[in-house]
Length: 63
Image 1 (cartoon, rainbow, N blue to C red):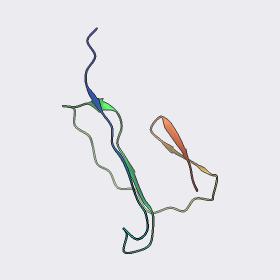
Image 2 (image 1 turned 120 degrees about the vertical axis):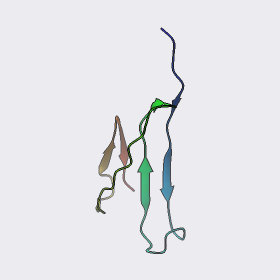
Image 3 (image 1 turned 30 degrees about the vertical axis):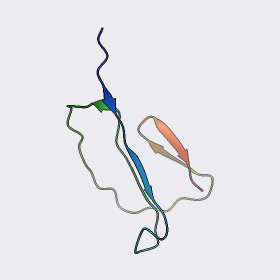
């Protein structure tokens, strides 16, 4: 079976990069490079230190 190239991007904007002072986190999922990646909006949310944020198949610990 041939392997298809995959691409995955994750970004974080921290102070002072955001005018609001909030942290912005974004991630897309691993997909073949020619497959459409849907962009969706999620409203702002707050997380406690140590809480895990589930994103696709990964969990990230909030600081």
